[in-house]
Image 1 (cartoon, rainbow, N blue to C red):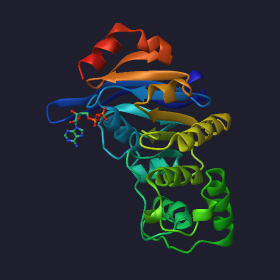
Image 2 (cartoon, rainbow, N blue to C red):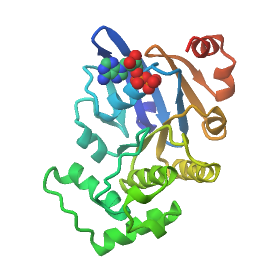
Image 3 (cartoon, protein in one colour):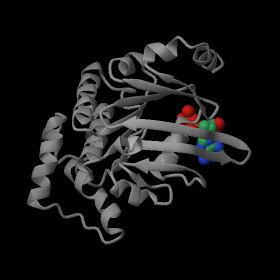
Image 4 (spheres, rainbow, N blue to C red):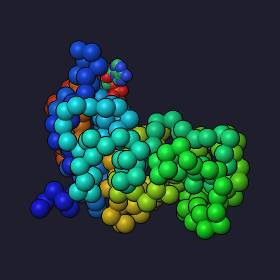
Length: 247
Ligand code: ADP
């Protein structure tokens, strides 16, 4: 049916913290060949929605379907293994591992639980170098991420996501705080994901970055989706203007 061609289908997702409805009945539909933006004022529930979709935060209400598989009862490791990858607002990298090890090693926690090792095989290294080369990071393959710039660390986190061969990539403010050159590289990379049929959902405040990239955006306010359409369409809606002015 129509739903199986979608990489992500969310229905009726809810999450409350005490009496606060951070995510209040959200529906989303993402096709594979599409880049989708998620925008909204601070505190509108974007990060919580990401956390509930990727399994970081549990939720009792709603369904999450990725690549035709129902995942709302699956834990975070299982969702990662099913191809649901995400990055964070602030890169979370292991300073004690090299850049190559940061790609290869963390995934083993998802695949093997506690039985993971740090050793990188020649084949893994070769594949990791190819991913890093696409991002202009090959020269830093054996460095610690601690010595890299903020923008480079964000790209390493993206490399971790690519390493997983994902079905769906969720990016939390990928362009925030990075140089225009890196941001252009990032936009190219997101487009190359779309060409490969990978679904992309990104939270981003930079509307110029979004409008050059996204076919559709969802606008959140107070835990709910209040508008959905192209950047131009939603920007023209009074409810969206009001939500931002009320921030
Ligand atoms: P956004 O990412 O759009 O800024 P968030 O998802 O971070 O919004 O927050 C949505 C609402 O949920 C806010 O009111 C925030 O204070 C609240 N919130 C987020 N996480 C927690 C938590 N762990 N405990 C309690 N309240 C939370």
